[in-house]
Length: 295
Length: 240
Figure 1: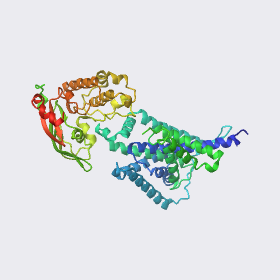
Figure 2: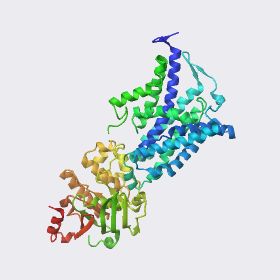
Figure 3: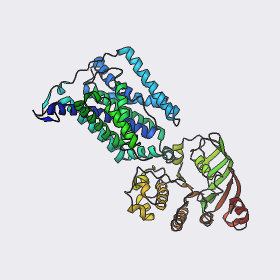
Figure 4: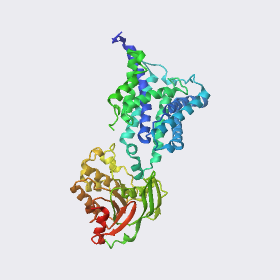
């Protein structure tokens, strides 16, 4: 069997695949954080909870009502996104324009409440979600085995990321969002309903997290605490990419998944720390992040 | 101009306007009126409250009391995004060109609020430089071009009252001259213009009336034909 730096090719490509998949989740989540931070200037600590809600609602809807995966893929982001808009309308709006620390504490508190209530109901042992039949099995590429579902996750995440990038960078609605990110007061002076734009943007960012949650349900253990562990990594990814950069969030997300996967192959003990190490180095040499604009 | 039948038709009436930023009390009871088709300037020293008056009209200050009527409609309770819908176009002192948008995106950003605005073609005819650079990043333009863009942007919306804050600031004389021509053209189209201006020599030949603002109040109103008679009063207010 062929070896690369003393590691079998199959092992390396397997870890790379896991890296790309984790990276796809990082990309979806950090993209939502970047979109929300751009317009609302808040650091959404509830983002992990929204991802978790995406996965949990998928499982609960299936168990209770038999709602299948494909319906969930569309329905769950809408449900969780609407829930996010309620949070924005009733809570976040009240502290708009205050210091970052208020929104940080508020969203963190909301996350803890959601997580605590759901832990009481569902426990932390992990709910089972059966993978749809169409995704069972995989294909042997010769050098590695590619499960169908993992391939689907990568394709779906990339499509949604690209779609989001396209909407923001290339459409009229996106130009409102970009301009609002720079000067929302002037936008309002032009007659644009900025409070509505803010609600929709928060809802959309939350939808991205919930979509990632639905994708995660069949392959990760679904528990009320699944969001809090991934969120810390995603924040590191956002810091590396640069807060508020849309394309940067996507590229950095996938890149960091791959870096993590490679580290797992060549030096496993460092794999859970490597992203934070990269973050420290980036902060030392480029405090605005790899894709961030100079202040 | 005096034959203009709209001349007696009130477009903006501000009475007893106070405005606050946090604890600081900036406007102390502004009273002014602008009739349809008039070009009125707000003169005064830096910090007198001229820009704040425009911002208060746009509901962009912290707190306001008093009354601001636009086309006879009380707007003190209006949300900021409803003001533009009354036909008001605002050009801020900092110009507000968006760096993440190209020139054309900047130009088409403000929604059309009334019919009768200029088409994109009209605007590109009036400002050929903007056409040439329509795919450049908005903030890559020169200062003069950015000012043209900031003006052009609100002409597309069909706004019939323009609030222009220090549009000649820091610009080369040739650009200032061009802006003067644009203002004359807009005035001839019947637009109402409120101009906050530092450059008195730019404003004097264009304006129908001048208000002098000091310490957040209107201290003098001077019509164009009284200008030479009251020049010394004006000079003492402006400190020239």
